[in-house]
Image 1: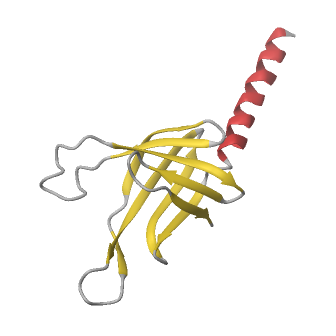
Image 2 (image 1 turned 135 degrees about the horizontal axis):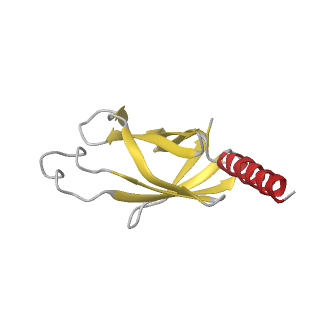
Image 3 (image 1 turned 90 degrees about the horizontal axis):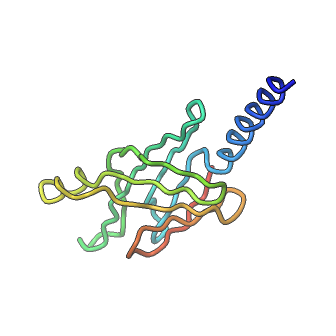
Length: 133
């Protein structure tokens, strides 16, 4: 009987973990000045969150209309989701080489604010509203 109870409890734990990550999995996009600014893809690979983030460079100052262009995808790591907030880090080494090669990783927080809505923050920066597709 104890073995059955332990098995059922472990199954419930796995099910609740999968259920908890459903609020965060998917493709999240954010805009600044009506242009793409960030795209994040988050998935659950066997109970472990994985993800990649793309930052867009928004240009304003060359006499042309504002426009954005994507950078390369960067892996998200140290991903921790508590059911309402995802904390993660992104390497900054390739952002603006060579001056960023020794920079430490950057910490971010995505707080779920509603169905398919969230707010991404980085310390010292303006929060960015994201929408999940």
